[in-house]
Length: 199
Image (cartoon, rainbow, N blue to C red; front, side, top):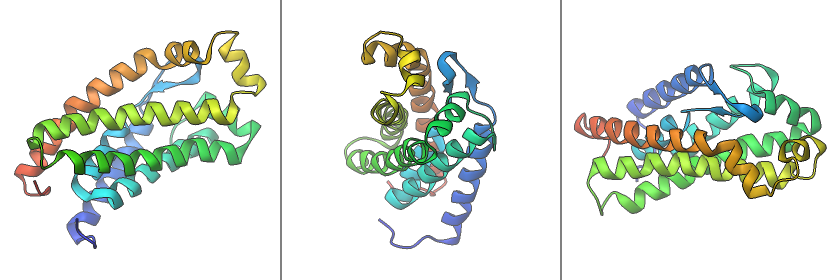
């Protein structure tokens, strides 16, 4: 793994942040204040192309954008606005830290795969992992940090936590994982062909 970023790496990071900003503005709203988002795709690409550091940077940028959306900056999150009203600090942890960890863990997944399977398949699995980890960590942090609040208890509405999570992100998660897997696989193969990713 490279210890320093090249100029090309910085350009790729800047492009991925720009893509994150655009994707942040085109979320597809769903019930319960959540939305379908494809921001984990740039996170997966950074993790593949730039390793743990790149995954952490773009994962952190995703988390920061997600937190800013609680205030109507670079998009809007209804749930985020409600949660930041309860605790800005916990909202930051839930939105930023979970996405930072997605970037780091996704890079580790790719590192485990890259010598074992071909570049396209490793990209597909890494994209899937990014979307899966995003859902897992985001919802886990939501339940752990806000599960006892009146706001979340009203959303849970007497169901089990697992039933609430499935009802809240069931369709979202499936769509995100499929799209992230397909697009990350295709993009990573193209970047490898352009020699922007080492095998």
